[in-house]
Amino acid sequence: MHPDDPMGPVSEAAGFLFSEFNRLGVLEAQFYENDDAWDKRPKPSPDPALRGHFRDAITRTENLAHAKLSKDPKDRDALFAMTLSSGLQADYAALIEKKNLASLHFTKEASVSAQRLLSVCHDCYDALLATGFSKYIIGSMSTPVRWILRMGGLPADKQGGIADLQKTAEHGHYLAPFARILLAIAYVREKDKPRAVELLSGLQREFPGNTLFPRQIEHLQRSR
Image (tube, rainbow, N blue to C red; front, top):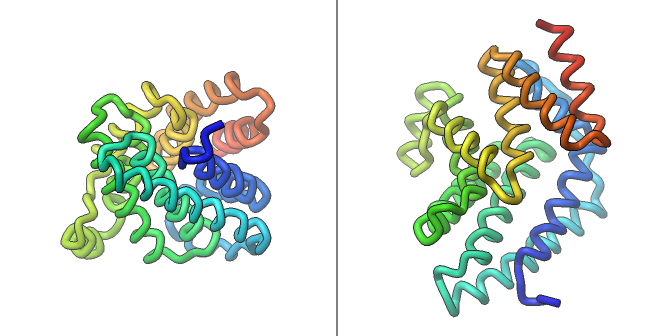
C-alpha cells in the first residue's frame, strides 16, 4: 500500500539479520561476560544468499529514504529508516563478519541519523537505542581507543548509554524488546546478573515462544 515508505524494506532487512543471528547463535554469544571470550569466538559462516537479500533490502531502504529527505530533510520515517539501516549494517559487520572498524563507521552513521531524528521528534524514543548502543560500546573500550574515537565524533559514556537504552526499553514503540535484550547483555557485562535475569524473565513472559530467553536465564542462574 505504501511502496515509497522506507520502513518496509528496512523491516525486511531486520528480519533477514535476526534470522541469521538466530541460526548462528549470535545473540547467545553476546552474553559472554568478558571481552576475551568474545574476541576468541569462531567467525560465523554467513549464508551468502541471505546476505544478498539483506543488502538488497538495505539498498532499497536508503534509496527510498534519500528520496524522501530530498523533499523534506525532517521526514521522521526517513530519518528513522536511515537510523535503523546503519544500525543493522553495524550489527552485521561486527557480529557476523567480525569487521569492527566497519561496524564503528556504521555505528557513527546510526548515531548521527538518530540525533537528527531526535532534533525534530523529541519523543521518538526508538532512536535512543542507536545513541545508547554507541555510547555504551565506545565507553567500554580502553582509554586510548576511547580518546581516538571521541576525536572522530563518537561519544564514550557507558552510563549515559545505559540510560538511553532504558528509555527505549520503557517508552520505545518498535525497539523496546531489543533494548531490553541489549540492557540484559550490558548488565551481565557489568556483573549485575540479577537485573539481567529480571529483564529476560519479563521478555520470556511477553514472548513465550522465543527459546533464547529461557536458555539464557538458565545459563545465568547456573553461573551465579
